[in-house]
Image 1 (cartoon, rainbow, N blue to C red):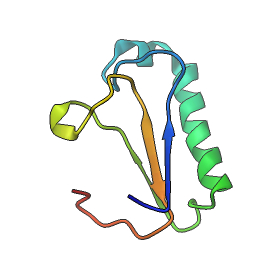
Image 2: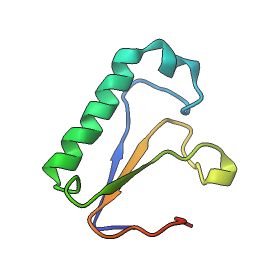
Image 3: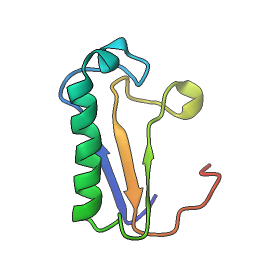
Length: 82
């Protein structure tokens, strides 16, 4: 996909971005977005740009029933993605 492709997976089981547990735990949401920011800075993809992807549902390509984020960068990313 790109030179940098990192998966961020919360330890707490959350089935998808539509899972009500996610909105019930704002601290977890804050931690996830803080982790994305920190990793983007550490890998320096924040300088030129990066993409954060969540796949939800079969038509989106979801294959794992556990919320996870794809942090992608390190090169120019085209649109539409696929």
